[in-house]
Length: 102
Image (cartoon, rainbow, N blue to C red; front, side):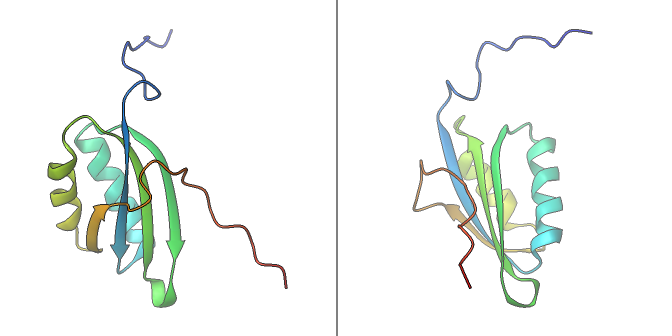
């Protein structure tokens, strides 16, 4: 079975980075992925930054197809998400921080 070729690829479409504050980073990760899949949003990158007591941040890169405000509203409604906004570092690559030398 061959993979269909899509005309509009992720590299051609604009992208946006979303920053999510979470109460439960792993639970939020599951719900965010399901929300993106349910609404057919193209996931371009994901970074999970854990914090104290299970809290943390998710940085999510998605294709900007004009539905970002609706997506942000849906993500804010998820039980594990405390807040969602467009990232201040829009356009930056989502890479984990380098480990600190001991």
